[in-house]
Structure formats: C-alpha cells, structure tokens
Length: 96
Image (cartoon, rainbow, N blue to C red):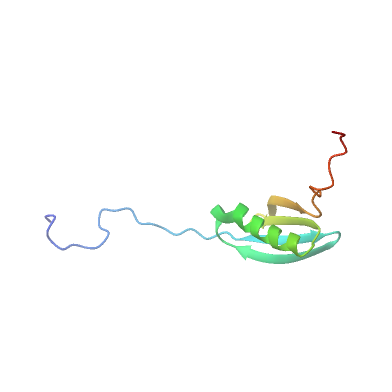
C-alpha cells in the first residue's frame, strides 16, 4: 500500500491501552472524626487539589489535618495541617 492509499486506521501504530484510573480521596480529620471532602482521579493535580480544599477549610476556621488517600493502595500520599496560623501582627517576641 502506498502512502496515498486508504488503509486501516491505526495500522502499524501501537495501540493505546487505557489503564484503570486510580482515584484519590481527600479527607478532613479532626480528632477521631474523618470526613471525605472530595475524590479526584487527576494524579498530576494532587497537591493543587489538596491546597484548594485546605484553603477553603482554613477560611471556614477548620482545624485538624487534610489527608490525600490513594484509594487503590489505601495509603496517605499527602498531608496538610489545618489550624490557626501565627498572627503576623503579633511579633516574634524580639525587642527592636
């Protein structure tokens, strides 16, 4: 077959096989309580996803820990501590 002749699509090219998509679960943990905040299948967006939820929960006054769980393995892959941040107007206790 020459380059200009019609042929079967994809002939001679490797087939792309889709692998099962693993999902991650974002959990908010406070003491003994765990709440699922979201689920995501975008591995490259793990830190972005966690940051977005951490910012929202912090604005709402949440404390505790935000944990990203790989649902397939059941393991924590990222964590963020939530809570009050140091007040920048409070100073560091040093005298000028």
